[in-house]
Length: 208
Image (cartoon, rainbow, N blue to C red; front, side):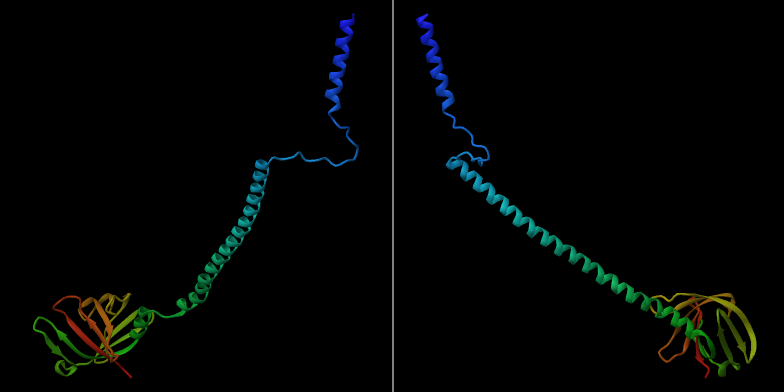
């Protein structure tokens, strides 16, 4: 029995030593952070520096992105503005085709015709008669010989090609052909050319 009592006393002493190492907690007292080793403090400092650097870089990226969006918006606005201002001008300006077609309308007097297999030249004096050619809107043409109607027909105007000439397609033959090439010289004369190589080139002058 004496041995059991001694063992019980030793156990009690051991338990008191284990529990007595803890200091009692005071209600309302602030919690203390555990002490960090030097290596842990280095890691915490590096993490804080990384957070700060990331925040700074994020703000810089936002600024750059904002500038980029603004540049793109300005880039789009300028071309669209040019289109808005230039479109009415493009629609309203006449083309070379329109100008040539408008020049046709009116009455023209025959000056001469050159060509044929022999390369001859014919004029009102050599042939003994006059001719006039009248183009009226929208697409009618009339040829008179000595003031008498010779041919009246309609024509189709085909847009000019590179050299500034255009094609006329007649519903009925005019001067023996159903199509001719037309151009206006620098002097303002009208030139009608037959399509075949042995055809004629007719020169007409506008009546005043």
